Image 1 (cartoon, rainbow, N blue to C red):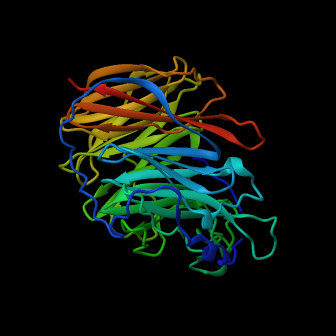
Image 2: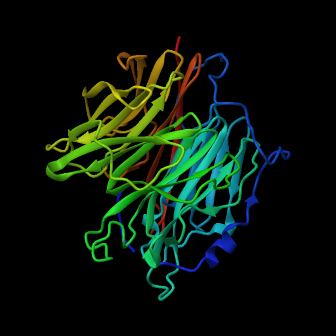
Amino acid sequence: MHSRFAPPALLLLLAACTTKTIVHKDAPGPTSPPDEPASEPAAETCAPEAAAVSSEANVYGSGAVAFASSGGLGIAYVDTSGIPTLQLQGATTKKLTWPGARVEFDHYGPSYVTTSLAANGTRFGFGWYTERTSATSKASGTWSTMFATASPSGETSDAVMGNEDWGRSGTDDTVVADQPGVLPRGDGFLLVWNDMRTKEPRVMNVNLAGWHGLYARAFDANGEPTMTDEQVAQPTRTSARTGVADGEGAKVIWSVRESDFDTTIHVRSGTRFTPAEAPPPVATFKSYGTTDSLASARTANGEVLVVATRTDNASQKHVGSLFLGRSGDVKTAWADWPDVGLEDVAVTASGTGFVVAAVARATSELRVFVLDGSGARVRDEHIALPAPLTDKTLLHAPAVRAAADTIDVALATATDGAKPGERKLTVVRARLCTR
């Protein structure tokens, strides 16, 4: 999750972006949810499964994976025709596409294409990056975000722009939105992104320092926007973003790279956000890398475990965590875990606490940690991956789901494809039994 640059565009792209196509789907379900609520799934008869490849695809940029509460796995990516695509793996496999929202990357190239996926109950929210054409030059791409939802039955919403094209200060206030991330919010979703608007903060009406604000826009479960885009914090330059549903709203959590290699973690809760400087940090730690990740999960009583990675000055990867109360106050302060070499983390709440998944590149493993309700470790599992991870393997954040008797994990990795700019996305799944 890294920042970049780029002058507004006409909204002609949007007209093409509101056409949906379902390539494979079951018999039509209702257009509107609700799907079943995001409750703890019923007990399952568990049979452990070793890590095995469940999907492969040629893609541009990055992929994303997420588990629904029902156990279905979503795999989001942009294919090599530029089409946003969502695979749903459950009792059957469905492939959903949005061909009217073809991704543009003429100026910066396909490696910048970014996708994000989150589940809220059984429904998925899918966000991705595209360029919009500049009003003055085709060669001058400007970053934008897009968003859509999908149900387990294969019903999709139209793809709509996440950010609004124009800033609040006028048509010369360019909106440059990149690094989209999807979070659950109430019974819908919150799309968050980095945004470099030329007049925010105002320094002679020009953003000379390249400041980025953290912006967000809420959508209901049907993919309809329920508010205009808003600042969550400004100025800031986020390195990672996560969050959890919090009543009708969301608790947005993000990290910021400060000076002297300090990284800070911040939290804001609400149903609406207004321009504000970042709240005081809830944690501070040293990190010397550029690929730190951040994950969070919320218990039924509203407490939140935040898990993050950092890089020490010898380039070793570490995981640490902190425990937040219902109001975002710190119950247990940030602490490094003793393990070394863990990167790209995911966390989910379980009936008795939390489950954390992390990637160990050096040993080509998925590590799974079962924690109690206070965040203390009670179990540590090693899952061997079916193919070795190399220094050139691109890792995407894993996904983890905990049910009464099972823990499901998934990991998306990417390697260079056969053609320039293409990547081969591989998704691996495994299952552990809790007893």
